[in-house]
Image (cartoon, rainbow, N blue to C red; front, side, top):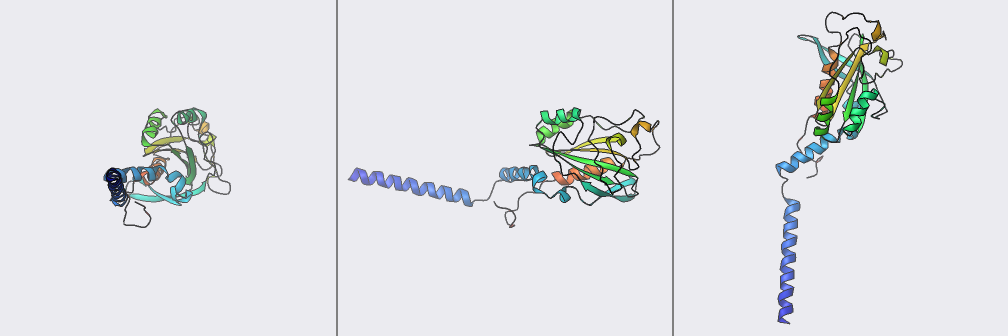
Length: 237
C-alpha cells in the first residue's frame, strides 16, 4: 500500500507539473522568432486572402517626369490565375520549375490613356523560390525595333476600356521585380494596339516609364510585413 501511495503521488506530481507547463506555454507571450514566422506566413497567403482590388488598387501613382506625379488607372482584373495562361510558354516553364502557385493579372492605363500596362503577380511558397525564379527570368527589355517583346507576361485587354486593343502583338516593353514570395512582371504597349513589329526605331523619352513604377508599387505593398500585434483583435497569438 505504501508503494502504491508513493507511485500515485509521483504520478500526481508529474501530472500537475505537465499541466502547469502546458498552461504556461499556452499563456506566454510569443517570441520574436514566432512573430516573424507568423508575419512571413501572412505575407505568403495574401495572394489568396486579400481581395483582388486590394492587390490591384484602382489607382497607382507614378512619376513620368521628375517632380511630377500622375496616376495609372486600373481597367480590369483577369479572373484566371493559372500559371500557364498568364505568361508565354518559355516563362511558364521557369515558373513551374520553382513551384508557381498562381499568376494574378490586371491592366492599367496611364493618365493620358495612351499607354497600357498589364501587371502580373506570380505567387511562390516562399521568398527563396521566388528569388531563384526571379534570377532566371528574362530581364527588362524596351522597344528596339525587333518586334513584339517575348517571352513576357501576356497582355490582358478589357473590352469597352482604354486597354481594349492592347494584345500580345502590341507588347513593346517588359520588366521584372520581386517582393518577398512574389515576382511581379509587367508588359506594356500603346492603347491604340499598334503592333510592336511596326515600330522601326526607338521613341524619344521613356514612353513606358510607368511600367516598372506600377509593378514596384504593387510588389512593395504586397510584400510589406506586418508583425502580429497580440493586443489587437484581428491577431490570435
